[in-house]
Image (cartoon, rainbow, N blue to C red; front, side, top):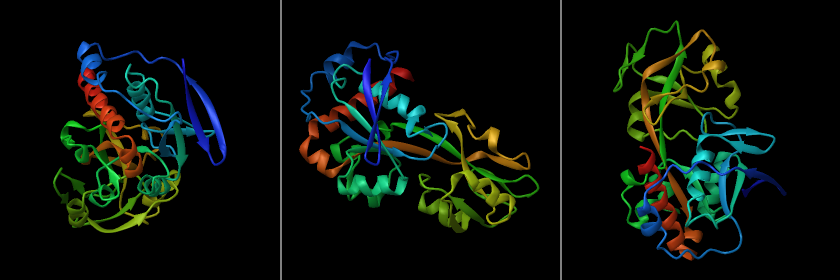
Length: 272
């Protein structure tokens, strides 16, 4: 058993995490990644996570975080060459997470690619790793609209509607070109629990929801999406996410950051 730490404000919560079944069996993992000598301070790696649930990736209850992303991260740091690195999960509002990764307040998070963010934080491509080979995971994101509305989405453009007023919550990163083509304007959604009400009340034409994970249909919000709203297929965007490090952490521990990225790639290859 290993200890994972959860911090909220000045409080630190400990949670025992059972050994995850190792999905990797290749000896290459031990020789290629394990050959790297990792040097890291005795402090835990500070990983920022959202303090609101983003199903199925994050579920937050009583300052404890679970979900697919946490499972994936725990599996990553159970690998032999990374298992000595402690992890401290820090739940914060997502915008604060993004500020902290840029300022060095946290060491790592999982996020989509942003050119602006890449100027202040370190993505795998800054380590010489191709972005397509360093995707940590990805999801399909769908529009949710009123069932009575007649417009649709064909995978490239809106049908029977020029543009929509789009409710957008923190954490969803929409390519600028897609946004310009489809969104008349964007309304920020800060209370995620109320986003579907915005559609029902005609404050927005559509909001977004996860509708697939790694090309498999998965609508974790299905139980709370009102029956008079529809999830629109095909997906509006594919949303890959990456391991992102603070510049301060990467400057101090470049070999460790690179080994984490390499181990993530090997883990993903082993479960495909």
